[in-house]
Image (cartoon, rainbow, N blue to C red; front, top):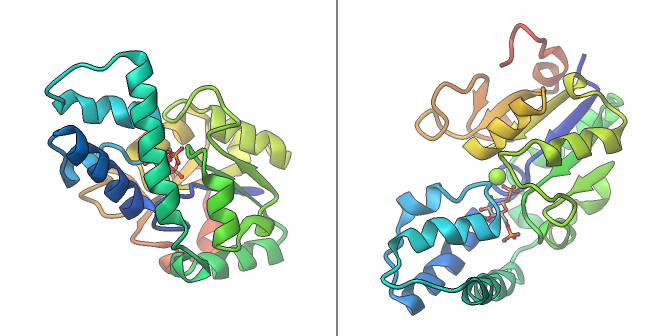
Length: 220
Ligand code: B16
Ligand code: MG
């Protein structure tokens, strides 16, 4: 049943979410915008420009299109500087083991991330060559919750959507995977992903049997 497994990147394979938070926080401080972890939770899995749009809801002034692009660039510069500090030790627990077990069973594996920095991150954590396909924010015109990224990943794997299982940590990504007609395994807490089943705190809790046996009736 499961021929392809598609992994979200940030929050599933590597915890770059904290670095996104620090980079946005730095920009918000410079611009005098209120920004906290509650707002940050709304940025999970959504594109850079959509994230900026959410942050600017609290802005004391308005910004032109050109100014918004420049703010997004500034955030990305800070974020990429922070990415210099990550390496193989930052791969989330259980990820390498699950990838190896899936590959051993002949399951194709892909990454579908909203991030335009996904390949750089995968290189830095030394996982890039472990995937049969990588789809990032540069490969799609419509970000999650649009299903384009997951559909592109399935196409590159040579799998039909119903043959794919997605690991996702963000509501936007879960919606995207469901709209793509794929089964979803949530990664996170019930507070953050209410109603998502199955759900695990991290990939270390997921067995290859769960992935292989995940049928239409057991996943939603
Ligand atoms: P960038 P994912 C997403 O990655 C992040 O969760 C989200 O917070 C970020 O805004 C988005 O990538 C875009 O990232 O600014 O690097 O292009 O969870 O889809 O792997
Ligand atoms: Mg994510």
